[in-house]
Amino acid sequence: MKRSPSYPPAEVHSVDSSSLEETDLEETEWCVGGSVELTVEKAIYGGKLMGSAPDGRVVWIKSAQPLAIGDRGRGRVLKVAKRSFEVYIDDLLSASPDRVEPFCSHIERCGGCPWQAISTTDQVESLERDIRRMISRAMGEEVVFAPSFIALDDDHEGEREPREREPRESEPREWRHTARLHSEPISRGQQENSPSTGEVATLGFHGAGGIFHLDHCPVFTPLLNRILSAVQSELPSSLQSGRAEVRLSCAQEAKSGTVAVSLLGLWSAEAIQGVGEALERMVESVEL
Image (tube, rainbow, N blue to C red; front, side, top):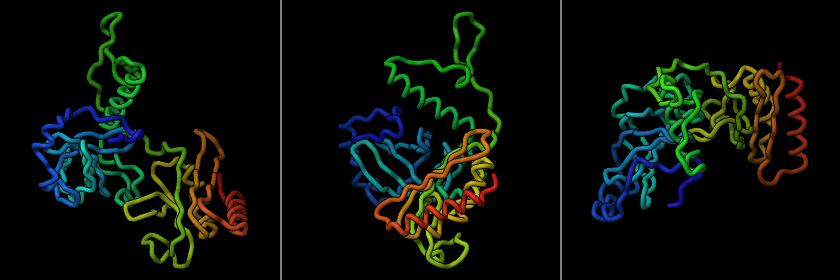
């Protein structure tokens, strides 16, 4: 199996190919479309969640609902590979004692922050583990992180040993300075959270039911949310001719930001001009 470069290879399971042949899970419920139960065991860099099958193979977990490490759920097998499965969790059977309440009411539809049910401490530890592994592989030797990443014990001169970290408090949420939105032409009447009817483009994140329109995001900085509001006010009516990507960005402590529109596929000169005019109106309307 060719692994995706967006997250490091899992190292928690050692899979013996002979045991796979003996177990032959594909002839049980562990076949495409089968109903299975499993526990979320790890959060993996890139927003991924991972569990394991009875034969030790890795299970990559997807779900519209937020999941935490230790949650147990029931779901459907989407893909079967030689050394892994892909499962979509439909029902949460039991919650982890470490599970935290997601702070965003759109979590099950938006899909932008899949780790909201995971505590800050578990998130940081998961990222440290995977980043350390990637750096160690690149360096060809094990690396020790600086104190900004992991708590170190300085009691012994010349030696710095990792020690147990104190639980972290919740971090401020308005941290995100960049965003990439997607746009597709769609009737507003077909979209649950669209404000009115009429043929326009829906602009937002890829969610469980398609593109999810949003005017405000709790993890955006105040400036990025003001830019988002101006974009949603002016751009959708000009993006009805095809698919597009809209990138928003603003530097920390900055008083201005950037909006970049990428038009995908074939667009007429008139449609492109309409997008340009919408951008001009947006610049005039945004309150920085």
